[in-house]
Image (cartoon, rainbow, N blue to C red; front, side):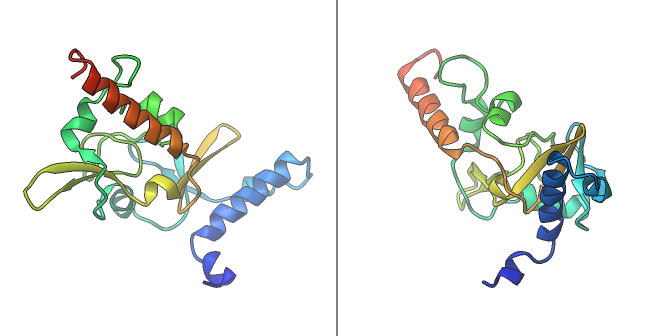
Length: 181
């Protein structure tokens, strides 16, 4: 893959925003960051706008939540799973946001209101599963002058190791504690 291909399309906007943010934070007199084009508010997110990338809300919703076959655990388990050291849901927005996931309210492709990049899938027996999509790792969000800007294809700032360890700890605590189970 060439560098030109790697930086084509929607990635230019993300690179421009990062450069502009770096310039504005370095004391540069030219306010390049003010010229970055942001799009409409992100449907179902709080105080977040899209970087103007030409995606419709429906296409964005599909990219964020439609399964490509990833299966992390049964859907019902994930919705019921509590954090290992308390009774708060593992899927709690504040908990998952602390791990770097981007909170999102329910939508057509996200009826459970899971963060960006979580999907719901059905296997050949009709059982529901929760998995992750590419958007979990490749949808970024930067904060600039009080505005949160979502970048499709951008770098997410996940602590995936903490997420994995948290899931394992939560499942272990549930298996070991009849009250949690």
